[in-house]
Amino acid sequence: FTTTTKTFNGLTFTFTRTSNSVYVTTGTTTVTTATPIGWYDGVIPAGYRPVEGVELVYLQKPSAGGYMSASPSGRGYFNGPLIVGDKPRIVAYYPTTDAWPTN
Image (cartoon, rainbow, N blue to C red; front, top):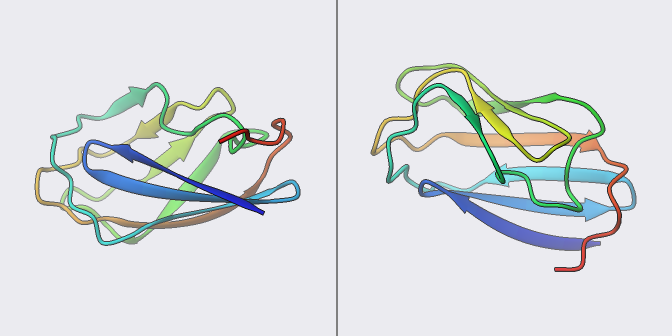
């Protein structure tokens, strides 16, 4: 297996790849930059992208609620804004056909 982290607006994602499966979690990190509803490039690193769009489940939702989606292109979609100070927790598992990461 291999693991990498990616920080987006203060939210630190940990991606763990085992064979063709990816596990995603966030720790108790705090949002440092307000994030409006929308798509954002480069949230999911190469080697860890899903086969098709998936919803990443919030164990602890941000203030405004909502969810996050991940696309095969590595973009992330937030359907609810993230407010500075939010501490959302995410756990997800999905298949990937990306080449093995070189991180």
